[in-house]
Image 1 (cartoon, rainbow, N blue to C red):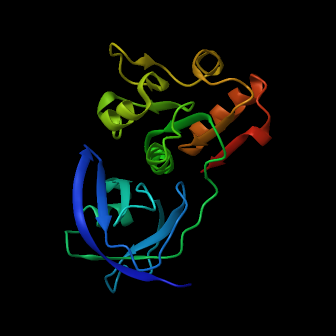
Image 2 (image 1 turned 90 degrees about the vertical axis):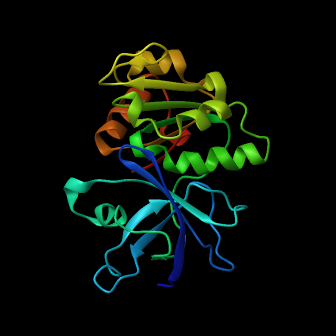
Length: 222
């Protein structure tokens, strides 16, 4: 498999457990908003430890961007990424992934499952085609919401947050269920895009089926 070595040009903490990494972009490298790549750290003991991460920038950016949730307890690749610095190198492979924009719809994300949608929304904004899309974003608390300000500015009232472990004015409380979908999702003629932890995905797909959404109208990635 072809691989590319890229230097980290910027690191920023976005939430208590999420960081933004920006890197050089190899000449001729491309991806479709929503896609991911297999990434590793360019260090002898870590080069073969690959994990998929979604691009969160757009194809028009002069850099590659990844927004990554850090899991220190897992003692895995994200824990190692938490310790890299600007100037260190990563290894990426060709882009891949099942999520891509297929038309206006309702995007349903859980936690770090928002990442493929970030790239899609940013690309649609650049093309002035973002209107008509809705985002339902499920998190545990307000502190877990990734890019809340930017998403709010892009989507306005079409950005709907629900928190499972915190009650706060302006935010719904609980989980995405049938009643929540009926109240906030787009019409049945539109598409649905779903990405999040497997238990959340299973639950949302079950609720979508219960309200009559056909599988053919759903784009998803675990």
